[in-house]
Structure formats: structure tokens, C-alpha cells
Image 1 (cartoon, rainbow, N blue to C red):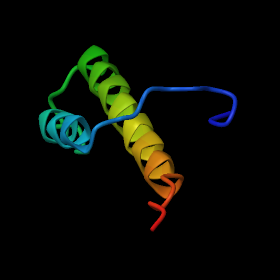
Image 2: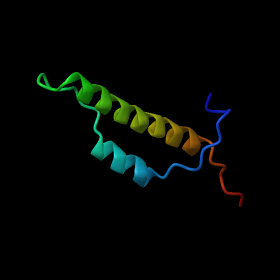
Image 3: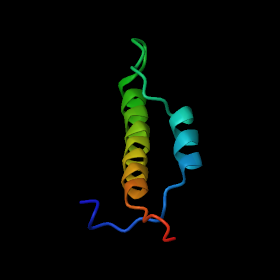
Image 4: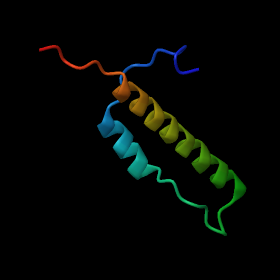
Length: 65
């Protein structure tokens, strides 16, 4: 799936900011279903970008000397 998609480089600063803004947290008991699903979707995007960042970081060629 990821090999088929060409995405622009994902900056680490962006991933960190989104991770802070949309933390991976359990819902509260009084959260409404709609809010739980909205937060789950937001976090899903952060997790996706984290995975893309990690894959892109692994594929960065080493500089030639």
C-alpha cells in the first residue's frame, strides 16, 4: 500500500505537534460516541503520518563521501 502511494516528506516537527495535539488516550466514561469516533479518526491520521515518517526516515540514502 505505502509503496504505491507517493507522499511528500513528512516533517518530524509536524508529527510531534499533531501527536501532542491529538494524543493516544483512552476515552472518558462520559464521552459521547460521536466524540469518541471523531478522536479515534484524528488519532488514526497521526498514527498514519508517524508510520509514513518512519518509513521515509529508513529510506533516506546516506550521503556519499
